[in-house]
Length: 150
Image (cartoon, rainbow, N blue to C red):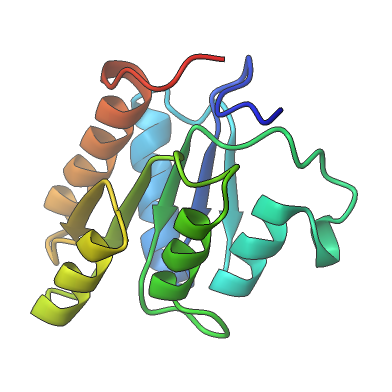
């Protein structure tokens, strides 16, 4: 059996831009939402982490994150492919996935929702607005939203 939640709130955050990831992590921390955030730098690493393969082969595959924050434009495997894979696998298809990306392209938005994303957020260019958006995402999906119980 695979748990969508464990005793420690966890976020898998896939982001290749160091400035964006640092700002997001600081925003989450400011609102005490960094209990457990796993930052990965590309889609390949995100999939390895989720499915306990490659560099994460010793990770307990049954302990899934409570939320996936996913950038779209990443090297190796893009966010659309990560989302497609997450939604196609029985034990990950119910995980909440939020796209947090700089892409406001209609085709990306449509494809993300077609594949079952829970929310699509375009990163604001303004530093303060970006920080506010990041903390609101964490606040809603970790503290407000009622997820699937163990």
